[in-house]
Length: 612
Image (tube, rainbow, N blue to C red; front, side, top):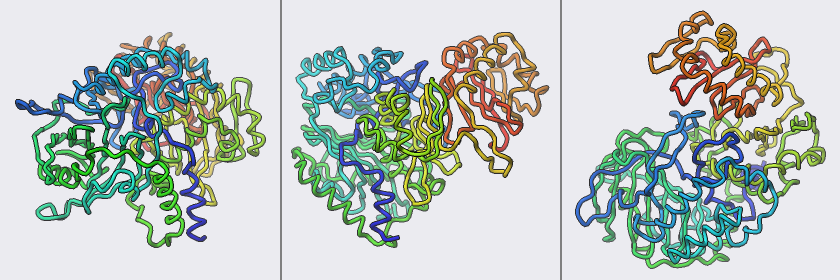
């Protein structure tokens, strides 16, 4: 295969000609909903962890950038995968400037409005995939009703701000064209995006290998510059404000900075440049690991990274030339297509690549492009991305489709029914820590709404696309276990819904022996009163009163309120009620519970053996 063919069949699969809404990618959902896939009305930003100590006199610190209200975020495990049903409240800072600026005050008001608007998703559900009429003026913001548009207009008028007009993706190596040379030779900048006024955000890495720091290796960062005078709706989750050591620092070019050394995998660099505000999110801290950087850092490493940027080159702000950017991006992609394969960067250290053969950045771009296609209603392109044959399940029945043409008959009953909410959910979730693999060879994003992987010709294809109302899964409805056993029937939405309602009935009636018989063993049981391992149903019954005996009725009510299963990429694993229950088909063909948990009563039961 030639290099041009390689890029056409892999890399070019995930690049669109339209604008990708990277702004939405920077944001995450807030709060819980009975229909989590149609919750569009709350914005919470990117990733987690960090903050500051006391602020010295006449010195702006992290506290001065803090937004007045905390936001709820999903708990993630050590791999960065969301733990179903677990939420915590965290501090957020504005990316637009200190808290007393018009930009940050406007952001706080807009977030407060969204936090209480359309919480059950009823409005967005009625809109579906229909045009709202707000796309032209509010295309860079989450606006889909006149009430939202009116509130946003009220806020920007109050603070005398403008709205973003356009956004353009910026490929690696094109940043000097976009904003000038603002970094030193030890810094690498990856792809990102820029707005018409010069506001931009990018991911990147730097080598801290000079002087006494020689040997540390690469350190990852996310760089944001927000130009004043325009409303920007992105905030950053900084965890707990008390986790930081904070001090003032003067960069080599004379710029005054605020540095915040975080406890775990976040640290901060802040600078007010007068006409813009810079925030650098550094992906490690005092006790950080090697997930995104080379390990823990101290004050010296953070200062060295802070000195790797030329802040004075970013002011005064120079508005980008859109046509020049588009031309530069096109030349960059053409140069990649012609680059010899042996000169490409090594991908062996990318965990997602090792598991799936897809680089993390390519997987993220694929999800963003899919969201764009869904939002724009490009049904033929979406049909062309599916793996066939596929099993389509809707409220009207279950069907097998063998080609894109056959699938298009069911487009309106599936993707078309919830396109806007599904696209928004994908655009919120595909940060690198949110695109993951379960070891099956497939990658997943948006809380399991999409599962995708490489097929024989090295192209990326969709194996599962689903909401709690419909699903599209590769195959004809049967799955073969890895052990070589005979094929067994995959989970269906109807079967999963019936199982969940039956489980709710058992919980309400206190049928403890039957409930114990549905669990998968060995199981780890956690409750406020202790922690146990149950290897049999009989052993679990000794823990029953510590779990269902405290909060069973609440869990049963949650299952009845949201009995719609969310299936994984293989069709053999499902969850419901915001992750309160996870279940699968056991070796005997019957459905078994892998996890049950209660957020309210703080107990959980989780399968603790080898993964089924």
